[in-house]
Length: 143
Image (spheres, helix red, strand yellow):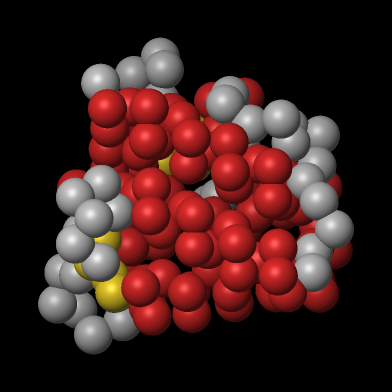
């Protein structure tokens, strides 16, 4: 139950920050807060099971994929262009849904660049800074 609340709060933070103007400070706050909520055991390292748990909370109909409505369910940024862009960024097969492989497996492997099964805070910061900056510069016009 506590992990579910953390995942909900994580989603709210993501949505709130992504719906605002993208200043460096906002991006830093987003990364800091979101990592603290995804790192559910607070050991400073995220493992795939923690990201997988966030997916399970968002996947309310348990079909093993996230619709945009599910992705933004606990967020107030459903109309935010950046929310759409980040969702589309993760939707690599462009079917309009985030499969578990796209949202968990692919994202985790991109963050875990050395393949040790652990995403450090540095790895997490680097990944999300690049994603947010990519979407700020390219948005819905390209990848």
